[in-house]
Length: 411
Image 1 (cartoon, rainbow, N blue to C red):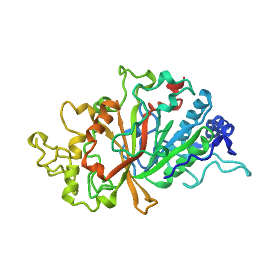
Image 2 (cartoon, rainbow, N blue to C red; image 1 turned 90 degrees about the vertical axis):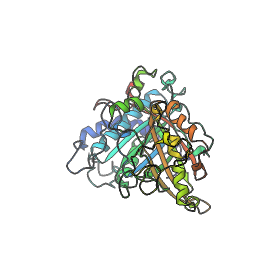
Image 3 (cartoon, helix red, strand yellow; image 1 turned 180 degrees about the vertical axis):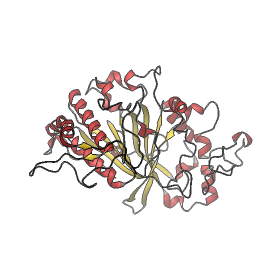
Image 4 (cartoon, helix red, strand yellow; image 1 turned 30 degrees about the vertical axis):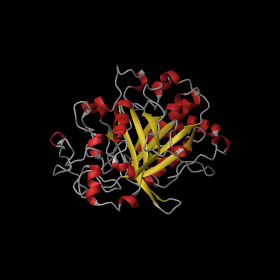
């Protein structure tokens, strides 16, 4: 949960040449001795598969822990970028399918950190990879292939953005049920891509279990994501999340999705001094059940037409602004994939915790930015402070063993 922008990989002992050599050997090493396990095994956690037309990790329910890392790409040219993405894919494939790391000679360093033991579990990790607008500058000749709606995330009126915690050329999100699984994968990928990627910022998160049931809670104590569109509904996902053909996007981008990441500090010590009734009116939901204030159960639909003046659910309540539930706003819904975070205390001794918010959509302006503008100035802004994040494009899926992240973009 820290930034890392000091060391230049090109000046370290394992620099760009080491990365290129590692990229060339990564596939050969697995083929020679890395015995990969089947993609699923009895009793293994069920996570999104690596292969498919989409990155299915976008749709899967958040796991218990995550590490979200944004990188600056330091590859010098397009060929090196290609090698980088091929290496990233090979490591993701091995880490998600499991198996035995390649053995080494007596004098060589271990090929694996060993923190998961001799054999990597199968089906314990999911991976999501995205690219930022900066990757489409002049370095790699990709300007004409930039996703049409991909820009640098702006500062919204209630933000307090810190440059060290914003943007990036590439986003990597690792999802698992155990912290050591996530950290093992992060170290493995960092090792194999050293010289091609430099960490820009990283934030770790966790998902609370349902308490006592239903949708998990955020650190303000309220259920988070109750009104999400149904991820198992392919028609909804094609309408709201996945980029499709005929959308004006480059052909290579079909099957991808726009990823928004927002790092939002919650001023919990201030929040904890607010009355429960005021908290509930700010959200528009009962804290205990998650039900809208005019309902009885979490998934009851609020009846806004019967409450035109906001006597029950205030007009500026979060749920009412975020999703007005009209025919005109139905196409503005987003798929939330949020985690909580805890960074201990700040320099003043205040608790530093909040929300690692992530969402996916087909169109940044039509969906996230439209919703964000409606939320500007809502009462909750006194208790939250967005300080970082960025816009990325979650790449189309890796279709099979021969495919790799970004192949259609770079071929």
